[in-house]
Length: 252
Image 1 (cartoon, rainbow, N blue to C red):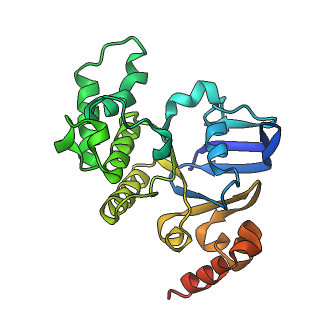
Image 2 (cartoon, one colour; image 1 turned 90 degrees about the vertical axis):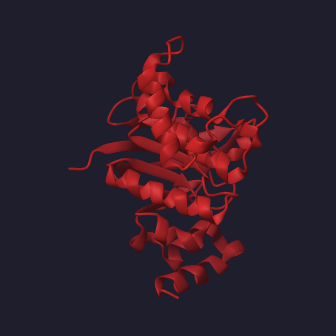
């Protein structure tokens, strides 16, 4: 039986007195890949940060695993947008991935054999083990994204939140990420991904959460990836998205 991993009720969030999200009600069950989609400024990244407790809601609440965010934050792995990271910081690939194990030893704990093995396994899963001693700033964008995926894997979480992991990566990295996501789903993990590319959405996600300040639609991809929902989400500015949906639904 699927477990509820995330529940939000009447969630409202503002930033500098400007509404970013309001009235969001959603329940996410375990064991699937969920896309979070909508136009720029729709509140997608804000939603993830609110789920992690980085932003306090103006109204409403978020629960993780039927408990508080604070008590269950250790069960979440997070992959930030690449643009939000200081890639000039002098740290090796292996050190970055080891950061994912810190919760298991505490802030001042000693990283031991188990943590090192966990980090090594995570690097192998994303195909970056041979670059473990490289400086993170020396890597390509796709390689950097793989390293941050490995850091999240090293957290050995149950719910993973990923903010645009496919942005700016090469085709090989994109395929590697998709393969990794499928393995995670098989292991019973739940993954929520902020994503922009509609043509790939039907192939990548089991469910999609469409946001545009409000929750427009949430459900199985085959049920919600429709012309009507896309028009409600993106509006007249992006009516071409409706054509994309029609083509994709017909398998063209």
